Length: 142
Image 1 (tube, rainbow, N blue to C red):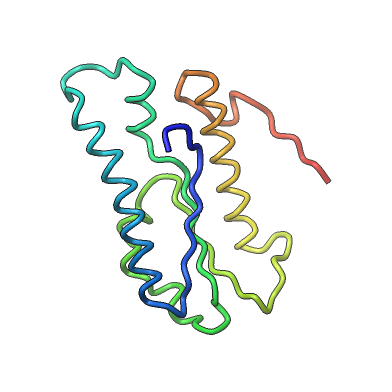
Image 2: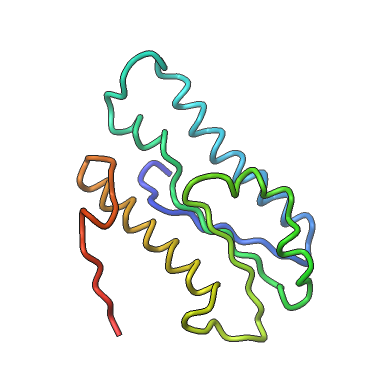
């Protein structure tokens, strides 16, 4: 996962075990990054690109399926509260009975996630560790 610029995690709202596994995966991801950063001397300045890479969380999209069966569980996921405070963390609940419409909140969240992935990739390519709209211009493809 050293070269990853984005992460998509999916879980099933109809299965509590799926949500528990999701939390374990996310904790494992963020704790490993934190442990790697702790192994370097915290008093030293950041010297290596890998230190910058591990100190910044990668964009993460959590997709919850079966929203049509369990709409009350989508917003009441207290286990993911700690992870939602992370920078570049996005959640979407999908209903299989409804299409994903342009301009809908779910579509906007997915677009923000992919914009964050592109920013992370551009920052990694630049070597600066700083992405954003100043480093590139986004083209709209119809």
